[in-house]
Length: 464
Image 1 (tube, one colour):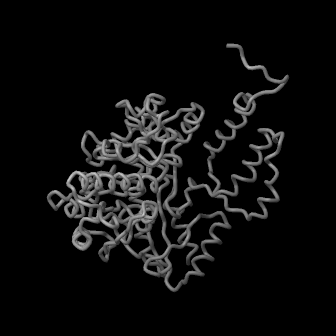
Image 2 (cartoon, rainbow, N blue to C red):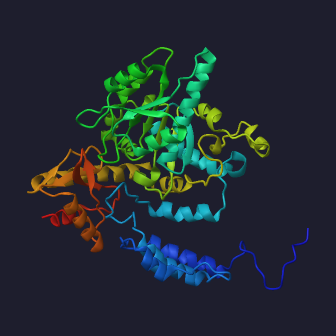
């Protein structure tokens, strides 16, 4: 077939130029290999309007001007989550291998939603998912899919759980309840409430103990009250604010204890369950092996770039009924027994977002991952001891994973905020206030292997 005729000198967007690719790759190389990652800080809308408006034009401004605008104006207005002093929320610290391979994933134009279109990529992703499932003690048939993040992972797992509950009711002739119920801890991540709102179901919070851990007896009490309306219980494998791991084993006993009425157990391990790679931490997660679904976010403590959440099912086939989309143009996919990732979560189009983690694991080996995660845990304990030893500072709780929560005696919210603003303005670190039971507190979320004891003690010095 002859090539389509087009006007003289005209080129298509897909053709591009060698110089455009070179300029982008050169900037990406510089950024990936920065010896000292800049922390940077947000800019005001007015300043960005003044410096960066007018980039979208009929003729285009050209790749050189566009990349210069990004490098010199837009990127410095974004905080670098891989900076060793970025200690707020849950940071990201992707390995250089994962960062570099993320470019390959984009350049390869791989569609990762179906086996027929992306079998090689899906196979590599499944290698990682099977390794994670084995680490978490799930059976050999377990598997899943990489989705955007923990919110989508939790939502997809809970949609599957409700579908399973509905199917059981139909098979047994029982009516569905007027309102379905999810049970979780009062300390559970906000994405559980978000998922419930999307699904139009209720969330009932079970009271955690004084140490912040949810236990089976509290769950059992809620189950007794709400009966067959409960279709899922969510245990947390490392809370965001404190890094607390629920008593998953006793929760599992509560969900599986009633013959003929097993309740779906989902473990939200988005941040913390990666600590299971460290042998000494595995007992803290006892019971995960009984979960029906588990999530972990590699863009948090598994050193992958945004955005990636590994969603695992004990029985992946159960997710097919909940998530497989039906359409005539999809018949060629859905009528085969292939492993199609898009059948396992709330998505159809998907990037092969698990490949950067696969490449990094294949490059460095799992032992390096174990050692690096262990370093963060040991550093958290060391800086907690330092906080305890300093006048005017005190721990709110002893750290269990790599989150350290502490207070500056006598300070109020305004004091913490002013200190935090100054720390960022001086490009020292990014540490924002949090709260616990109404009390303003500070927290270090330690993820990056580049975060040092000296950096942390330097931050503590500014609190004197």
